[in-house]
Image 1 (tube, helix red, strand yellow):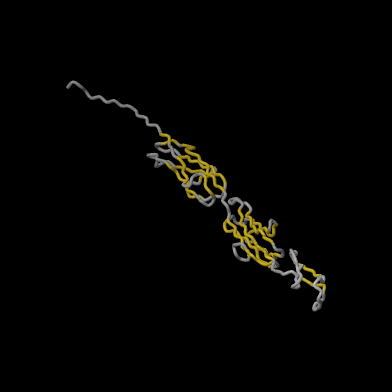
Image 2 (cartoon, helix red, strand yellow; image 1 turned 30 degrees about the horizontal axis):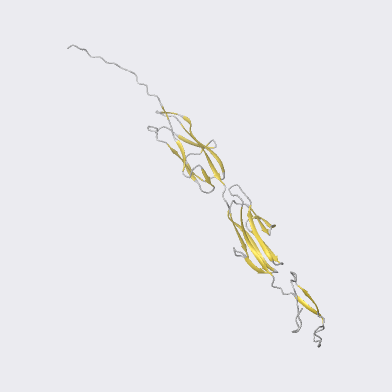
Length: 239
């Protein structure tokens, strides 16, 4: 034999890889209040069984989860511990979640009906307002033709007498709160004049007989909303 055995050894050094990943939000990173979203981790690192991924919200470790937060902005950060194959990463991804206000819903009823109302002068009806969607403890304000008639937490009621013929704007306003913007609902009260005017003949006296068709007739007319015109007739003379 011309050759003897020989062994060669070399040291192979495998460095830890940089770990990667990202944050995801099922409903995007800008959403409306009450919609909710799920914050998750997207990663495809092989051999990471001994790595822990952490999701922080405003510096608090909250993990990946379904959330439904109040209106505001929230800073999210993803980091990880190291492992056999990967180095630790203190900031793999950062995102800002923005939650916007939504419009509230208020309910205005006139005499118990959510609609315009037509009534006669001198009639009293209840004007009511309540919150259908909004923050607990929210303040609402009830107006009659721009004049505040009630304010407080839901529900509100006001018994109102409408004495004058006119159209009245009845509006309830939801004052802005943490999660809801300003909102309102408006209906109208149409008040009709059904009271006839009072007419008194001063001269001639009742049951007077005359052949004078030029006789002067004196009378008065009164009405609660004003007299537009007044006339008389005696079959041969009208004024």
